[in-house]
Length: 125
Ligand SMILES: [Cu+2]
Image 1 (cartoon, rainbow, N blue to C red):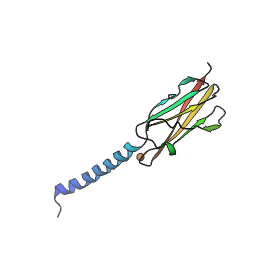
Image 2: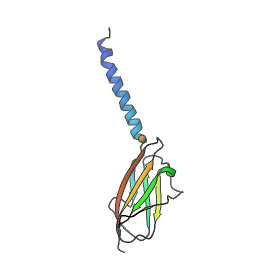
Image 3: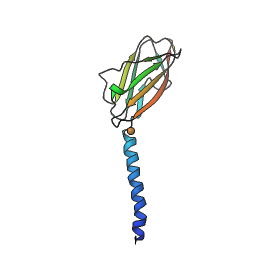
Image 4: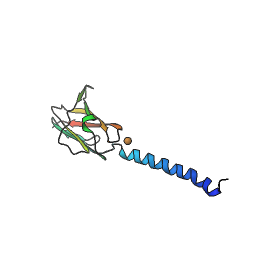
């Protein structure tokens, strides 16, 4: 027969183990920490340096940056090769004034992909 103590601890242990798994997998996801341009920022054109820093190392070869233009056409951006391991960066050139969106997709070392969009404005100089 199980003692009362064991009956109490089994579910607690199970819960703790589950929680650990969740925390471990969530910690390895790529979470965006900061970006240039920042969210809804207004930046001068026509050339805009784009930089996204994450909480973990990114597999740049399987991550994407796409620029959505004011006319809703989209352009994939070529990622700079010399970025730090936790950063995706690119140079967007020839941007006319208007509202843009930077769509990012990042693959973290745990194999999980996270995505997001950063709207920003290219101002008239
Ligand atoms: Cu993950």
